View 1 (tube, one colour):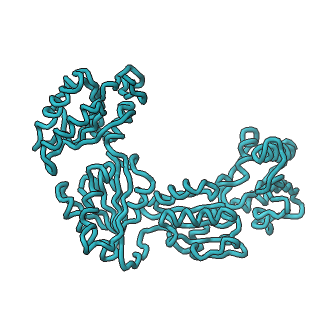
View 2 (cartoon, one colour):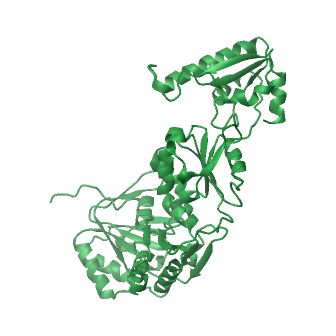
Length: 478
């Protein structure tokens, strides 16, 4: 307890505290030695905790009615001029019952909230482990969240505390395991109180876990590196731009990697973490990069190969898997995590031009001859497919866009909508829709993607922009 909390209790006329129907209050037990015989005590007993209720409003209705009645009881004392101290274990405004009194009384009576030591801080102190250091992100989660949500958030964050265990413990344990964090997890029960217990979470008996227990993923800074005979390679898609485009699973894989390998431009999108090695390279050495990552994994390193967009769409996943097919890498685990690809990002920014069947083609002739590209363009155009054209141009490739435009005009109207998306998700994002006949190759570079509409694709006025582009889901029968 803080010094100020002790002073408040000494000055109070009334001591109020919440408890379950068994009548025992943890908050009161913590402050017991400071409660005098002349204090008026108000035990605010919950009508229901985890059991069912026949209240017509269900659990929420029963609790709302209880809080209203409890606030009214305290208001009687306040109206009579008495000072009321409401006890709350931990901090009053951190997952605490007091906040329900505060909402109902603080606007009518002079109120002072005395901060307290949360179970999060107490658990870290008892573990003797830093909770968060430097730029690490601390996430606090209630164990009552759905398992999928817990898994996603645990995978994505650096440091976490999961509260409200008890009956949620088996679910929380599964979520930690699915997120790949179980080996890091620590368990703290009744921190700083009688019956305190700390342990490795993986070994805790679920039947022994009370409500007042937390799971802790401590700071990773200066954590002892894992000893592995064989590591793994995870190919991670960062989306077309920065952190907003990362999935929770990808964010978690990047955070837990020993080494990051990738094109320097993509590595720059990933926050630097203490103890993590970064291996940047040029954009045209995919095979060498893949073999380098696999060699690191053979030495027991957990490697994240960083790719832009979706790693399986004209990106690093194939390069890694091609290298991994060699006999010397046969026993190195490789996982591919999806990302938001440029076509989907540009389509969303423009409206829904990919709302019906579409084909994805790269205009780069670095790995396949132009004759193959042209043949595929003709096939997709004759089938009236929307086209997503990747890698349309660069400093060394300036003629492909004009060739593709002229070829497509043999099959499509010059008025066909073309979405020109550049730097999608980035600071220079630009999304325009132009007629196919007016597509200017000089305005297209490697940061641009082109979405060529079908005969059914429409452009219509729609706020907040001047218009949107969309392809109907229904195709005409004739």
